[in-house]
Length: 285
Image (cartoon, rainbow, N blue to C red; front, side):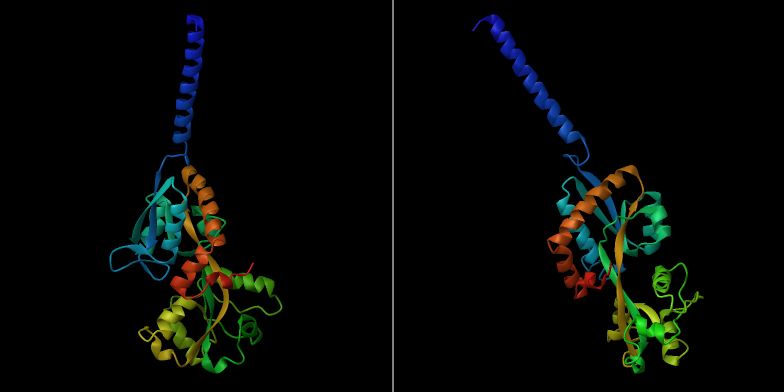
């Protein structure tokens, strides 16, 4: 081979080598392509079974385990978990101290203004009515309660439950529920007021009723033989994400991963493990 031909071959090889190096650098330099980004995940530390810190000091609970499953599907992200108070979670998320927060949070317009809330939920909170056992035959669901013109324990307008009843009334204008704004009261007041006949129902989360009333160690187990709970629907829960450009990109990866977890049955499996049932069965379109 002549010297000229050798120079041509060498030149071609050099171009190929440089091309490969540049391609690898480009592949490794962009988000989602080899670069591992650490996201700080914060969760409530005592809201079992949603999110809590176990006896070993480990972050766990339904939503935390879903996030861990999402992390396994996203090799370009690494989640670092911290358990904290509800107040610190929200303040830290808004300030950027944390990237992702999970607390069994419902969607509200106020939260959507502050945080990125993905379109796809992470779980669901089952809500319904706590009533007197003696009323079980006449009040079997929320529609029958509305038709009896029953009195509902007042709800704070800042509470996401207020929005749920407002939405119900918008679609049931012929038989709306009398919705009154709450003054300060405790859960004990609500249960006592229903039993006294001051009100006929308390809009209550299933988990709260089971832990407070049905559980033999519950704070209000003394009311167990006098109160009943009936389901209304599942309210979807979402992770709250600090609003910035990088996390907006993460939202897309989250959406893809959580859809896969729903399709492959992981969400259902984790729900049954932590709640004893598939909470998504209560969610209506």
